[in-house]
Length: 184
Image (tube, rainbow, N blue to C red; front, side):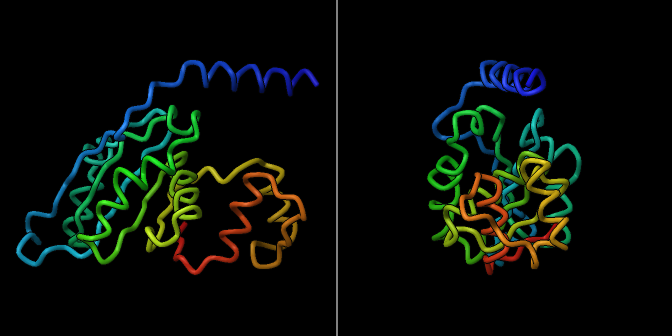
């Protein structure tokens, strides 16, 4: 019981200290200038991990590599913890980035690191027509007990979701049933 109290106290403190959210969510567009004449048909939306900034992807070479190897346009997103704490990450990504971009791009992929991974999955689950694929790097995938249950069953294909789903179990059930490509 004391561990649960400490966890909840820590969670409340983290939420109270979360940065304020903005409408629209902060973004940084990085069009692929080399492919501008060909009009890139794919947009890659990069979601940072907790404590990181969208522009960290630029500093660490993700954007340059996406341009050089994939010929895609890139948007980095300032999706900090505040958007997760107030549960607006899905709506902000949909309304501020995905829906407006859908008319300009044939394909939209989300790439998320850690907390950004859960944001990518939650968004694709709620707005499946707006996301064509997901790339996850060290994603946060929910509670340990849920991950252990999936592993104990022999993997996602063999895991049977419980009748009453918690938020992370719902997400695992969606991953099991979706046709959206997910790369871990």
